[in-house]
Length: 78
Image (cartoon, rainbow, N blue to C red; front, side):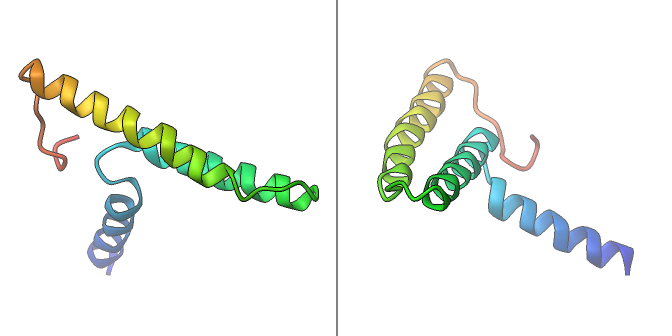
């Protein structure tokens, strides 16, 4: 039973975090900012598109820089 629970939690960790924990943290922060601004009655439609516009290029830049320097890693090895 513990093995199945562990596999279930590892699946969700890999699904949510994926290859880049920084993007996952950025998305959670953007969702929190969206919720906070919506609760305050402020327009919040723009937060997630801006977050994607910032997080995606940064993530791609990090991966391409690592590939240019010959540092590749299997996402399962951490």
